[in-house]
Length: 194
Image (tube, rainbow, N blue to C red; front, side, top):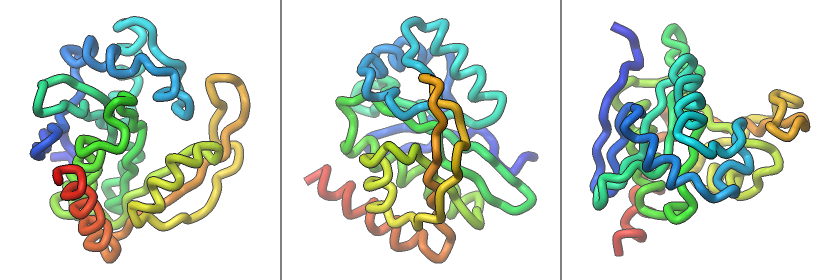
């Protein structure tokens, strides 16, 4: 039995379920805004086939979850467990994107609560990393608000789709910090619901 296995995580607003081909039409529609893809390592997919290729590549190196809006049953984004190290019980939450209409919504907040909660409370992770492009200031601010600690910058870590070199800002959460992060996410979720 592997440490990290496909699982479905259910909240009031979102269900995280292993990303499958049945999610492709919804995901393609949700990802139509170019801004969704601005800081991701892929160009915006224009067809289901292009999106299927991205997901297939992700499945080889990560465990991608479709973020499914409970109210409609539509897949509106992706988030993944990646860089999984069973021996040291560490992983990363990344490869995350959500359609622009769902930015800063209860779905986005609850998805983070579910995936981080599973990492710390079920998998008993020792460290969960979160990283972003150094030019993505919106993402850096969101990660910092979450309570993750900035660890540093990995210089020239990736080649962006436009050919430029990407520096990556690394953050992490460790078990001692999880209760405060969980409380923050629950507070944000209550704000969305109110």
